[in-house]
Amino acid sequence: MNRREALGRVGLILGGTIIGAEFFISGCKPSSKKVNELFDENNVALFDEIGETILPATSTPGAKAAAIGNFMALMVQDCYKPEDQKVFVKGISDLDEASKKKFSKSFMEADAKQRTELLTELDAEQKNYTKNKKPEDPNHYFRMMKELTLLGYFTSEVGATKALRYIAVPGHYDGNVPYKKGDKAWAT
Image 1: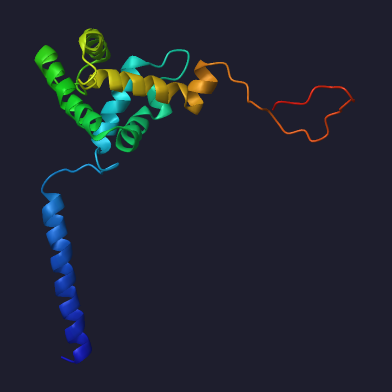
Image 2: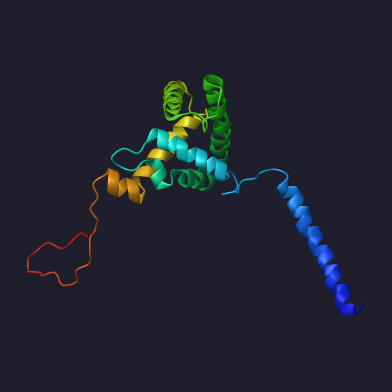
């Protein structure tokens, strides 16, 4: 055996060890890919379903068409205070527990009618909580989910152009607009 063959075999053994350890660690449990520091793909799928239950597809596209799950994950990660992030993250398990308690199945396993019924009850709960909460109390997780759904949908291209009337403002640029002495100046 020459030096080149020996180095090749050592490299193969070390590479196999590293790859094998990674496979052993990650291959034991099904893991979903992280979207950001707080959420993974399963959370985003859940947010999509929550959003679609709040704003379902009818004659216009629903919240899922606006990729509401990714929007929620991004907004909570980048814009929420740490205490609101904790409430939101805990709300995911609270919502799932409420579904299991009511229907003996997770929110993702529930049908559309059950999801609507559960979210209607959570909406009534959050309205009552918000009405009676003190300024220092944390926000209700479902209120945050609902607000993010509405904000994300109606500010998305799908929501703005399909669900709302849309006129591009300021429109196209026209550098040759006739001007007569005495006309008022353009504001836009």
